[in-house]
Length: 310
Length: 262
Image (cartoon, rainbow over all chains, first blue to last red; front, side, top):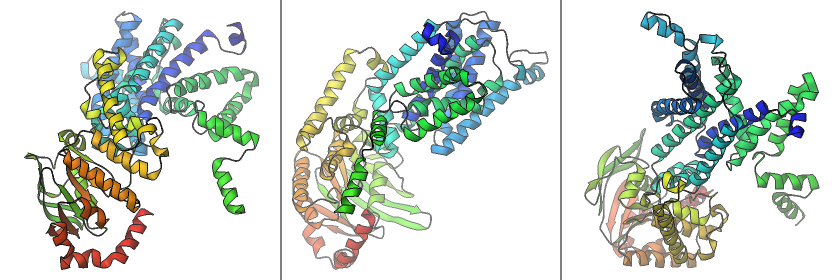
């Protein structure tokens, strides 16, 4: 533990690593099903605000807030998913970014809106300033437990009929449909699961960082979440977890570099993306890199050499 | 069993199918031939629900199916293969066959989470069906190889095994022998005949006339989206319109099929 602390990984950093791993898994679910959805920050915001209102205004315990936030996000995900998931690729990405912005702006203006409708002064989300003074009640063991349970569910999911259908849709949606898979149903269900997972991370994180404001859940946050999954790799569930860990810990470890920290951080990420395109958790990527370092030609290069000489 | 009435499909101004009438009787092998671009694949897409007719009706066992989504049609008992092999290449051969039994399974994610007896029994059952199909299509030792890494001929056979794993009553084969040599084609013909002996109905799109003559009970000829002839293989062979549209331009069609493949 002392060793970890000496390189900058304090308890709060470790807790945030766990939260970000959960966020990485939430986007991994949709990516694994072939959906380029970026709605996660929006659902995270819904979870965070609903959760905080439940613990602060209604004095409920954390677990109740967690369930409340997850249900709220799940309910919102249904009417969003049905129309939006007809879109694909970059169009889906843009539509879901739009959703995130709508959520952010609604939260920003919620008090004003609610006050003008009800006629009395409402103070719930507190606009751009956000909610402060939230007690830090999320504990490390709770985060660990939550992550372990999530991973167990994912592992079992992959071994089920449903999980196989997810992978089939990613690889060839039409072929999957003619193999008897209800593509619309699977996509929407996965979207809801992903929303629920993002919301749970939102609730847990809000009770760690002690303040939340609409700005925490903007486009930056979406890009971060996507980076966890891309850096770690999306071929297995381990990828987004490693990605979330690395991207959270790295800035802390690089504290020594003071003002150059951002540059060093960026360079490391760039190197990983260029040399390990499949992400950190991808055996084939490491093998390819190893061959490159040792100067062995790849299979394709060998064939090219043979055809040139022969 | 399958009945198409005045099926038309327009893509903008292009009439891909025009008033197609067609019947596939139960227990028969029906061939569908025609030059490239005649609309054969469009027709199969319309039957399997990937595309829907602009007008006309399609009935399967008395049920209207032309507005159903593909997975419902598969559930009713129509399976298909693709001309340009569309296996799930990143998955193993076995997984490909498990996926295509999706509609026959009932276990939920919850069953998988807590290993209910239902989940275990079902997984065992699906796996057995898959292994039997592998045996039958000479893919026995390949269950754990990635489908995308199989040699071409094996991929073709796996594509057919995968369609059969959905448990169909009617099988649509879209150019099953594309790229096969004469011996492989002959073997595939034997497989198709065996399917009919097991009470399966087959609609086969083909370029290879030897296969058509080997297996088909009757043939429809499609040209420019219209059925121009229908009858027994021997009759069709001597139909002057067919010879002109299809057989008479063999060199052209070969060129075209080359282009299509590349």
